Image (cartoon, rainbow, N blue to C red; front, side, top):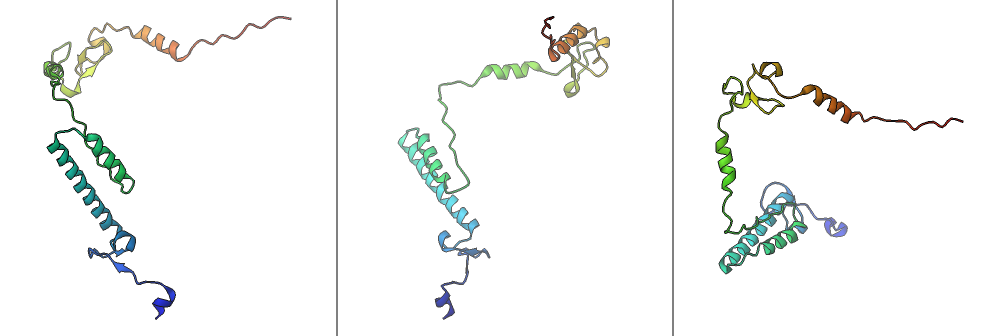
Length: 166
């Protein structure tokens, strides 16, 4: 009798029996189970549409993206299909050749293998820990003029305007 007078209902447990309470707006499921069910439905729709596009032979990735954007307003997860690359482009072979040519790194002075511990000098050579200093490997880089240029660049000359005499 009291329930009818106040209009309150007893809390309902989740339909999936996970232990949390559900609401009528989420089909008597808790928020986690509801999100999971919505996600499964979206994935099923996307899979069905992608299968249809493959069967039809048309590249309708824009259709998949628009359906994903439409469902993005209702859920937190967005599934984006990767764009299909044209089959006529060959893989870039130049990059593969450049990586293979590099080989093991060696010191410019003693030809010792340095690997990842090599030091790169400002003159452009890779050096070991013994020859990393400029006085140890006959460095051709002019540190003095480079430092002067850096200071001049960091601190531009400020000239005050001439004061007119009265």
